[in-house]
Amino acid sequence: MKTIKLTDEQIEQYSYADVAFLVLETNGKKMKIQDLFTEVIKLMKLPDSYFENKIGDFFALLSTDKRFLMLEKGFWDLRDNHAKKIIIDDEEDEEEELTDVEETIDDEELNEDEINYDNDQVDDDDDDDDLKDLVILDDSEEQDMM
Image (cartoon, rainbow, N blue to C red; front, side, top):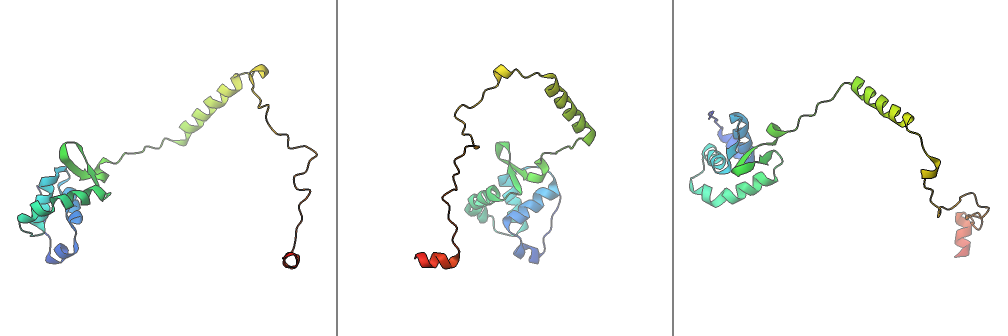
């Protein structure tokens, strides 16, 4: 394990999560929560009794901090070390795929008998105008009506 030294100023400013992040980042490998918290306590120069009193709080802190990821068998690591890598293909590949889809559509013939129309569909071209009784009032007319 690589040696990490914190100044007194850093110890005052850093939270448990910040120190745990530093430990995982420096070591570059996953750690069990007990070992990680022991290292955090040692770096922050806290008494050993602190472990038993605050391990639950430390677990809750790591669980809610998005920088950390809980792995199998009680191991923890940085989320960045397990991020999915997205590979973007060249635009030429996308154009080829689109061309294949267009050809497939062109090759298919639609059978008029297989097309289903909704019989309950309302015809919007009716002579009935829904807005024929609409009256527009300006502010002065509206006050007169009250």
